[in-house]
Image (cartoon, rainbow, N blue to C red):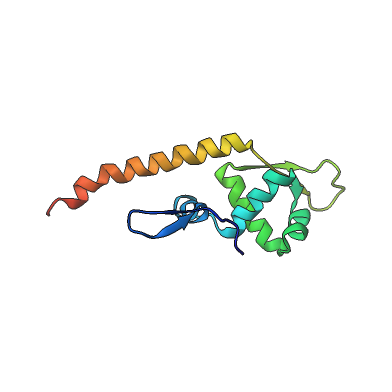
Length: 125
């Protein structure tokens, strides 16, 4: 599933997209990113709605929303219209600006971490 178009060329010459960077920093898959984009563009949805919209299995959607919730990109809210049995949840993305800020800050943090270990790693032992 291709979910992005914009790619940047790294100093090595390799071209990467946002999902590549998100995968490196957060272990986010193409599917996770597609679910996040869908929630941001379409508003809160249940797992069933996401599965139907994205033509994916409920198991795939479940894995993705759980990952996005654990990363703080999406909130899980109990569906008040759920009647008995297993509770149904609605998944709501946090504000897009907050997501952008979080990702940008985390990328800077990762870059700083690597920058701090480079001198130690380059020293002879």
